[in-house]
Image 1 (cartoon, helix red, strand yellow):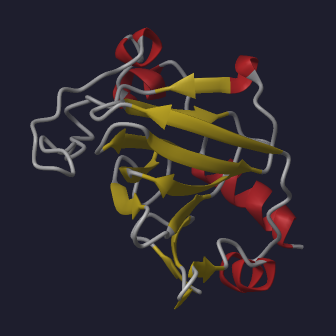
Image 2: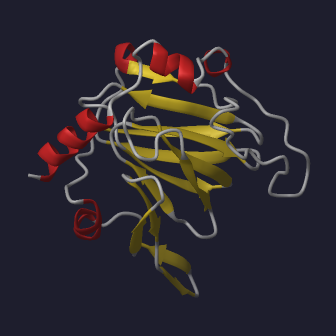
Image 3: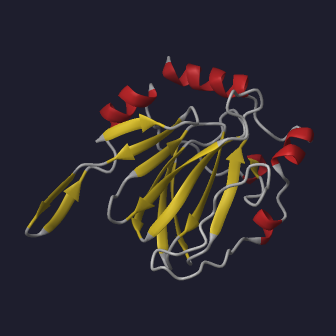
Length: 205
């Protein structure tokens, strides 16, 4: 596999190598040695989640308090999603910026988002499956959200599904009511860049 850092520091795209034969296909979805070489520390698995989404479903922008926050290694074993890493770390050189990776059941690639980053995706076809490997268990008291429709972030959410049909955005009540990035910053909700760096440095040791 190949792992490259995205334009948002702390987010990585994982490109897998496929081994097809007459029976089907085999690939390594995760390999600790390659991951550790690229990221600098192990991914300590604490929870694995699966979501199944209709086309147009938007999940996020979600993040957790640092520390420990919740790093995520995300794949799409069925369907297709456009996955975004959003830099919400106050003081970061790329604060408010994002990068994206198309995850699908053809390329079978992955995205890794380190602690302190915001995560959001949009499903591009019905019954799209997202698999999340997380290094911390879900803690509702430390989980937060930012509106994925925040005009200052201006995420380029697709208007067309994988089959060419028009996408109608579907958001939960919680995500619809989430604050903008500016509002979250003003209220002190966002993690700091320095705190996130310090925690990741501790993991690297």
